[in-house]
Image (tube, rainbow, N blue to C red; front, side, top):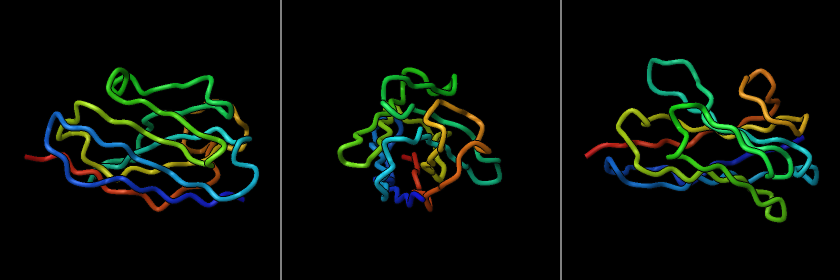
Length: 124
């Protein structure tokens, strides 16, 4: 089993940057693919980015390409989401999630473990 705790959210002005972190417990972290999802008020949760077990492959939702970067450090049991050029429409609760199969996936049904989320607000 994996427990996930996100951090790094907050209030940022449009055009600014934030780096989200997700700390994972469990000795099997390096066998999981990891993903970031987000949910804005009144909207369904949506896929943001994913990274495979090794960190060698990544996948992004089209609208996030070029602005967001997912990475991981298996030695630290952590996954990160660097977000640049933030826009008001990026405002949401951001969740990290662990996928047991190790391979990339954008469907949240493939993710077995979820963090509690961290709020990101982009506003002037």
